[in-house]
Length: 142
Image (tube, rainbow, N blue to C red):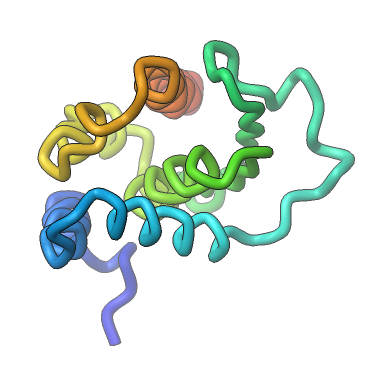
């Protein structure tokens, strides 16, 4: 079985687009996001600090990371179920990638699945903040 890290970033992005295209209605896509959020690993209460809080999100979103063999592994949590699904989607795509791979991405996958256009303005701003934080972490670890 091929793990996501053995696939190129483009392959994983295309798989996400395919997964979302299976659903005709956005209500079903939101349900899928909620399920993704439930799949996030445990996030320690002790890490729910201002240092890990993503600024610019209406909901609280904490993002932490570790580096192993030159790859960034993200861990996150949110106090809102849709937002938790959104950050889990980004982690599914970008965790385990090198900083160069992440910075080489245009993050257009969120537009290809129609995510940004189907979010409320505050959630869309939060999505942008999440992407910017992932980019910032990647730049810091080049």
